Image (cartoon, rainbow, N blue to C red; front, side):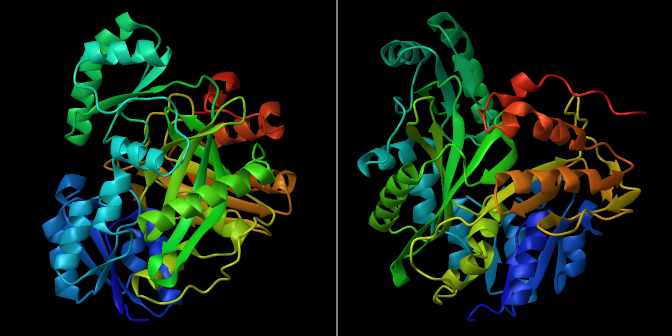
Length: 452
């Protein structure tokens, strides 16, 4: 392996995930951390650790000079960005390359082509990937109203530089669009320093389907590793993911696999990435965006394919051949992931604090990706994700049964978590039947308050 030491420009469970992959490949690791993460597990498990700033992410995990300095001080020769933070920042990838550091991910050009939602839509259209009716960047609210009337209400107003559901507005008439347009622009500028907005036709009951890719043009490798269903969401933030999707037929999967593989080859995309689609009530898939990084939910693909996506990212970055067969990959069995967050299960308010007791589940077909332990204080400075519970079964029913068991075995005391919400989701007859959509939680109803 030509990469000797990897600095992980991230924290929490994804930093630990990268450390594990590196250790199995004989690669040393460097953890960076803020002052509030000084006792975090990724700091303990890495070969070296460097404090890069205070708790505020803009002064630590988003501090590019501090991260580059940490790499130089420790002699790291590569950087893995994980997900979130700087993972899709083309400027950061460019700086890494200029400083002689291998960026473990796509090239800056790949990020620019696919990372912005409007240019990604234009690129997808040119490659024959199906799109929802929509617009380019809109300059004024009046222009947006004219476009929406042409597309047909309802529409969804989106921030071109947005992500994670932030900056989205569902609009059902012109008067409402005139009112929310300046508000959405202001939110986009505040959240992303980019006020560009565009419109798409709004699908009332869509399923969220995404396809995992792993590409290396040097090896003539454009692998499409099947799809994941991520329809159960709250405010466009995913809660439960599974692979494969019960809504996808073999024919649909094969058609989209061919289309995506051709698109990746034509654009020369490198490393892991995910193309996200909406599936409408008629069974039509429409491209939404591409995430040019590893995804939070990548473990479910790993479970049904047997491919270590992070290890393959490292091999691709090092210029080495992949260690899995090149023939088309078919999912084997079924995998499910539940995101366990430090939050009130009723109000969804973040719930940082001291974890007084932690017991992860175990047994056949259970995987736990997390960065928590008893005695650790959950900081309030970052995303509330604590643990990802992943289960695998020969079929969906077995995977769901194991997840119910795993949720029941999980003990995280001292703070509140959304485990009761997940238990409600898995017990719902629509979930059992695979009748999912991004509006599933609206049918679920309120969760009972936890005991005090």
